[in-house]
Image 1 (cartoon, one colour):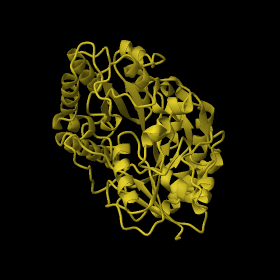
Image 2 (spheres, rainbow, N blue to C red):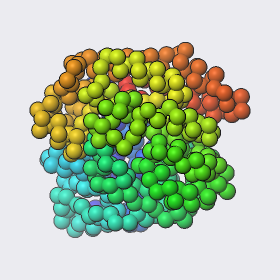
Image 3 (spheres, rainbow, N blue to C red):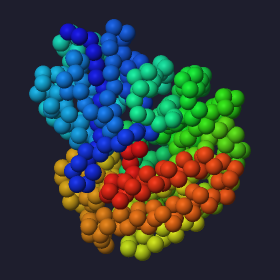
Length: 439
């Protein structure tokens, strides 16, 4: 038996049922380079990113690992079925199968539930011995990882930055969030020396930017401040995501900006406090959003955001409020999702138990299609509102105004031309009825 494993990151389907393919993938996942680094040296590893390349179904790999977040799990099942038809052993992982492992059915020979670090070598040894278990699960109590196998993705059509992990989990308890439902308020951090090691390696590969992966990088302000103090001397630009509460700590925000942070993404979810309360995010105060976002922007850090459409308190008038908010806030890269219950989350269980789901097949769920019975709107109206907001926000006039007429454009034209490119790219996806999810 050849000891080779093929890791596959599936793409997703658009609303017309076509696989989404791209010329370049900017946001590359870190899971497979990390798992490859944890794989014993006598194994050969290969990574396939289906969004930008074709799956080698005729591979000589003896083991296939297929994951994917959210509705990519649907494509993952199809890929697994084809490989099993060809006599391969296929394993699965990722948030969807971790939260609801029973939906893996007969498609996979084994499923890793949750983090894989503590079970990975056991799984490979069991495979070699012909004793693969149906499920592997072991809670992660500390986070320490080897240097990722970036070499396995460098030759692919990826962007000009690589991912580096700082932490996993989040102390907040938002019932719709898969991160909360997997970690239940636990936030794990890597040793700062490890993170800096990885950043230095990314720099040695010729990259000037990195994406700092963390479900909420500001969850531990002391940790973030120490990390930024180490990053400052590296001369690197970076991006990440966190709670908007970082803007309430001016000294920390200043340190983050000094260390080279160019963009932070915030999950705002809604401009309505009532809506935030309904989804378990009442710890946020929507009336503070504009002030806090302004503080982030004044520090020199630009803002990306994620918001939902179709929360119970939404009405047709919400569309105008949301568009006006984006205009006032100066958010450079706003993203939207239809409120879709992630299977296994507390919110999904609540909607299911209340009989509010219009679709029982969770593999048909998509962040661009409403599947919850709303108090005042039909699912068709919610989906229509979603695309209407996107088309308004990503009109050419609004794109050019927020990117080219930005007050810092002349100081850093290259950076804002990049933001312009991202906005135009999102606009093209929207016109094709593809939500700007994969990039």
